[in-house]
Image (cartoon, rainbow, N blue to C red; front, side, top):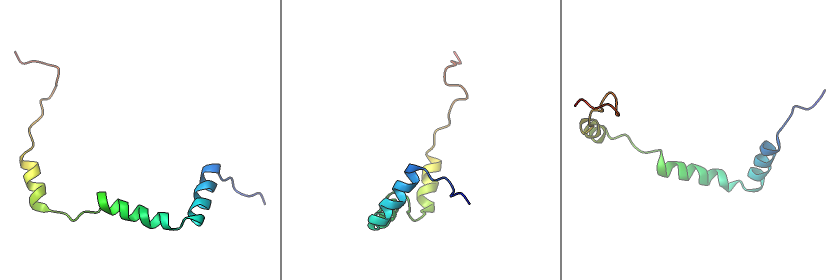
Length: 63
């Protein structure tokens, strides 16, 4: 039976992660720094209330 195709990129990433297992943990920490934040309902409500309504068409003047 023939082996399934594997791209050079996939092979490189798999081999790299075998040689550098700490990279996955660093990725998780970096993701937590920017994305995994606790939800703050009060802050979200303040953000929504401060939103300015957008005009239906930016390039048209009512004058």
